[in-house]
Image 1 (cartoon, one colour):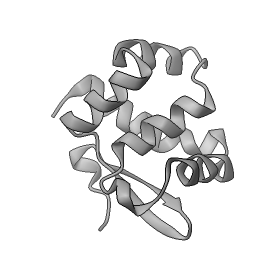
Image 2 (cartoon, helix red, strand yellow):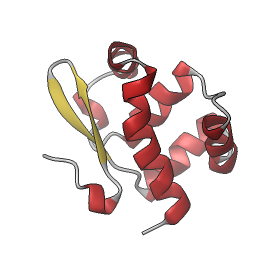
Image 3 (cartoon, rainbow, N blue to C red):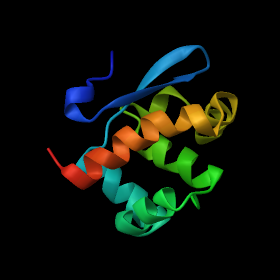
Length: 101
């Protein structure tokens, strides 16, 4: 499955596979439950204060198929990407959260 950017989806490579990140209502509620307010998450990201663990957790919650990999594998994928490249799907997802559908 390929990410549909028109729907606010993004993709990351985990273990040699491209996985779709979809900011569905359920995914965002689960992320918010763990990470706190999504507005605060956006503010921290804008201020450059988002932690690596928060990025990995947000991505993991937004995975289209969470059974495709573990949270640790997502964290390793973010680390492999580096923060600059990880910010690309992060910005796309957070932008979708702010804009809506």
